[in-house]
Length: 465
Ligand SMILES: [Zn+2]
Image (cartoon, rainbow, N blue to C red; front, side, top):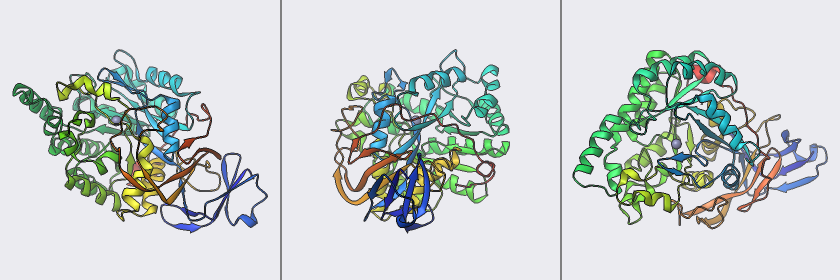
């Protein structure tokens, strides 16, 4: 054996057991008692700590261009930060460029990431134009290991939007070929109407970003997407849900037995729209916007009761300088927040330690469910013999205050700056190798690989995660 992790409390979505784990050749090779395993080269003592499945982040935009800025991280530094924070797989986006086809975007993204990533990654395909040629590529994209898709129901002026007329054939083709369609759900007409009115009245401060994207605008678009997918008999994934009305819609759809899934993000679970009223409010602009406390409580409730399947970071590492592009008007600020390195730590500290979710539920929403929904399971998200040895060791006693000092991608701010963490990942193991220890990256650039995904029939037929 290469490695034995012993004396830890090993966490699965349904149970926690004090067992030892043997790791060989990058895979989990044994679950039981260290004395019964063959001799190992290295022992890690996890006494007093939790051993959870390595995090799978379903939604990152590493080094992605948006609204005239390009995110500060790169596939090496970004995945280093993810690893430090207990994530061992990221699912990023291959973003179709205007005038090009979705497969061109996939090829370009693979070139950017391969050889740089320090942990494994997978991709979603993000289509922004539904030409016949683009639609014709979908079966091949799914067969090549990218079975999940994202569409914007907003950003008309930015020419990224897919309207309902195009959404229907896209979801249909994806569903017919074993893929999973999903949307960024906001109602473009409401937003454009309110933004024009705000700007006409000279209301350009950051809080107007939230006031022009009210909760019902998101709920309406989600409701529409849910009805469209119901009409088509298709599975559906809602990216970054932020409102309580949406939690209710998803809860009802799943109660009907429909294969509907949604994620929320670390920032929607912790930060309120009041951040937008601060002097540095423009930094907190993201879409959907931050919401009020009642939405935060509904999201935690949805996470706890099984309505919300996953927690993403929606990493978009725009710097203070990028954000200042919109200092005169909220609609010019690049949308998005950095912080994928804090996803697992915040879920543990704010969720488990504050009694909102169990450690088992945390394992499900940060890892196992994500791997299941997006077709990476049981290679990823599982502590099983034969699965990749992707593990995170969390010390519930480690106290930490969030700072940006050690961030590998050298970002100059964090939306979570100053947040106190009770408990934190102290070691991350990716494919049997220790890649991060006590907040420092100790792995190798290029050690990660692209992972092909295939979504199970079960996930596409019923709410199975
Ligand atoms: Zn996003």
